[in-house]
Length: 272
Ligand code: HEC
Image 1: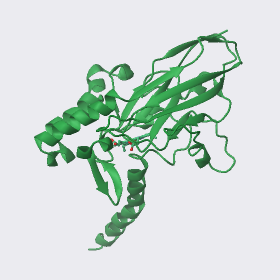
Image 2: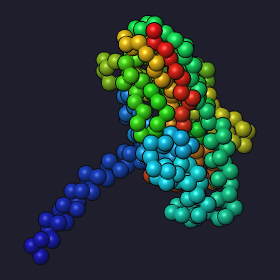
Image 3: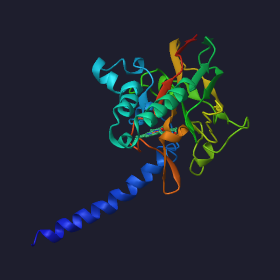
């Protein structure tokens, strides 16, 4: 009897402690990590699946395979596991076709000069398309490894000014960087683009671009640079969308594998 009260209190306290966290996270991730207004690297998106196995080439082959979209996401839908159990075989086939179409139309590219003088300023232009909406995440990185890529600053490139974002409506978008707390510098490697809409029936996908002004490292050498796109897939599909408390959420759930990580090509820059 004596022990019962303390354990009940502990459980209650835990619920209060974890409950809001779970809820806050649930709205933070599908929907984008809207409070993480800082430099970012793709390892943070642990629930997302990888569009290809090359970005997991540092892992044993079997572990890598399990984290690809084909296995973690598509095979789970095919098998009707977890939340996908409530779909008929036909709905599952529809959902798979829809998310594959989102993947096929989600792209990320980067343009940089092939060489630049040490310490000199240059521009990196990143262009992205696709996702399920309502947002896309774009990161400027050193290499295309999802667990080991660093924000580009890690290599010695400095981001000179707040990245210039052009949203899906073709207008400059300052929404993300304005979320930085009072007076903090806004020269981040990570941007969330808002206003992303996907209409699979009409074959329409949003595009966005982010332009970074960079200063080359002081030390000469050959460096690499690339960009990553973090996006969702299920909310583009009627078969993959559920409504929770008035919000559109992915059927696979907050910890499902319907998020993606995709890299641009890796560009080499000779710093002379
Ligand atoms: C707990 C699991 C989880 C973690 C951790 C997570 N995400 Fe996600 N995220 C998701 C899911 C699930 C979706 C997919 C929604 C869909 O399929 O439509 C998603 C979608 C997104 C989207 C697109 C918005 C949307 O709703 O489609 C962005 C951007 C994103 N995540 C960025 C990140 C970043 C950056 C991090 C690291 C800070 C991160 N995520 C960590 C689960 C997660």
